[in-house]
Length: 112
Length: 113
Image (cartoon, rainbow over all chains, first blue to last red; front, side):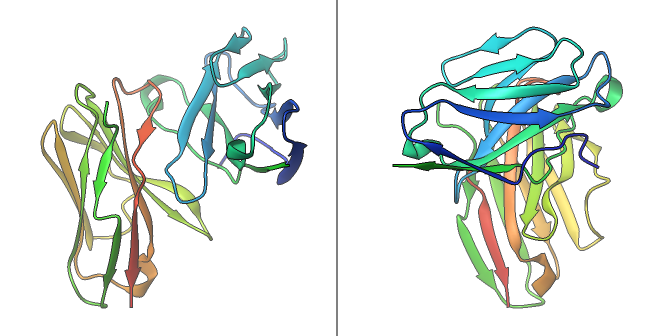
């Protein structure tokens, strides 16, 4: 049972920012938000994760709303190689914190 | 860093045959996961090892499936006997700790005819 809701698909123009939304209205106070992506024929790739504060790394930025009920993954300058399925995951806390439950994700298509 | 290495990359076998999938986790990682991906069910966790010990095998579909981790650098997932419905992509992943980001291999695509 995925705890997140994501759009099925999105399009983005090459060079533009890609903003991928995710709703997680039932998130608990100590559960992290994780983002992974899966490029065709490859394994899922870790992108970023966060708890409360916004996070940024070399791949992307993660913006989490103050109430933590939703978040947005931002790819600042999308390239054709960013075409992939993007998974937003709420990672369980406590004894089951090893579990990553993948939903259906968002297919992001970056167009030339 | 070579990443998580899985072999073979593709496996085609006939129903009833034994299949063994192999995984070498990232050196120093003490958590290892096996996942299965199908169009119908998406990515599902099959089994989780910590320090070579199986902790959660609740996702293993049935007794035909077994997994071992004889040492920190090697794990196998075995299906005996295989059935057509086992056709899927099987991923191995490892992490430095149980709640750290997972690093996935590129999977083994299994086809059972």
